[in-house]
Length: 193
Image (cartoon, rainbow, N blue to C red; front, side, top):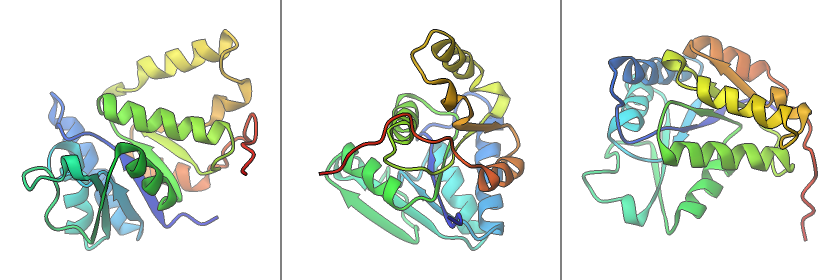
């Protein structure tokens, strides 16, 4: 399936170092240059704002999905191509998954980790077979990579999922690798109905 739209998980904070925001900006510009639509959490501040502003600044399309509880004027981005307001975080994640052909997690906090792990779990059980990437700015994801390898070694995660996440510190290279990536088959298949 061709990748036209990427859901990015990232936070409403900038992080402690300027490199995080610069990487978000570089990713947004690279997405716009490739004609890739951004789908994200709809915020106007921090990593979210930097990413969306970069996409929009280069003439790209940015789609926000934000729960009503977070949509106050000082939080939501005011200039998006589309903005969906939903009732819950669960609805937000479901709509972001539906609108995506692939996913990228940027450095972030609890919300970013929650979104990343939910989308990885959905891949594991066959609810989607879309590429998932990590933008590894300043080796941010090193601890997570170690933990995933430990979970595989200790038998809590299937060995075949070792290739689930595409990890790169360069935004352009990450996009290229994500587009070319074939996710591993699911461990089990969710039976609908």
